[in-house]
Length: 113
Length: 113
Image (cartoon, rainbow over all chains, first blue to last red; front, side):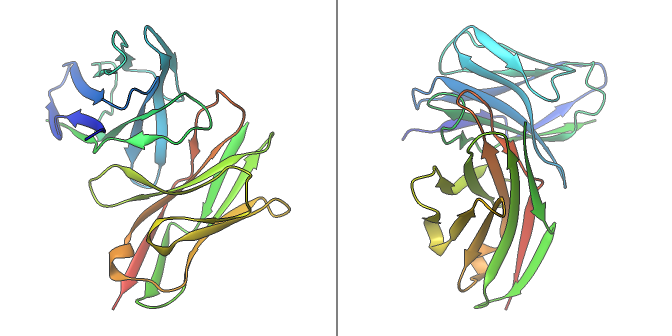
């Protein structure tokens, strides 16, 4: 089955710790995205990548970093500089960026200990 | 620039009643518009998409939406609500080719027996 997988489903972060969220897709999509979801805030774009080895900041990139070394993978690192990381994180992909439909993974919930 | 406003963070209906979820958009170019549904602790699933081919768009699960340029609206409707429709619904807009999606803050649909 083609789709997007995210792991882990739940992740706990200690103060001062960096954590990495995994996102993998087997849809052969060029574009991938990371969103943060907070209650009542909708989805806010963190980073996106239109092609391998290239990515752009979204609206709330501070405290986050990404890499895109393979077409299938777009991991997100939540750094210690992100002071309020507790949220639901969603990864998505589309054939290309822009007007194409985005397909979403099941999400990772990040909690701070 | 592009933006989406969803009127009403919560909408309550009785089972069998009409569902109407409101979405108004702003875009400097002819937009593509999307409705997504999210069930608790899951990713987003596409309901329907407007691409300028037809103003009335039919989606999955009996939902449809009508694009009204004069009103800059793209409201989502379903003639008869079912208990399984209870979820959060997001409207999104994409403007020019190469842009990203901008999401509204979401509307939680509550369905009572």
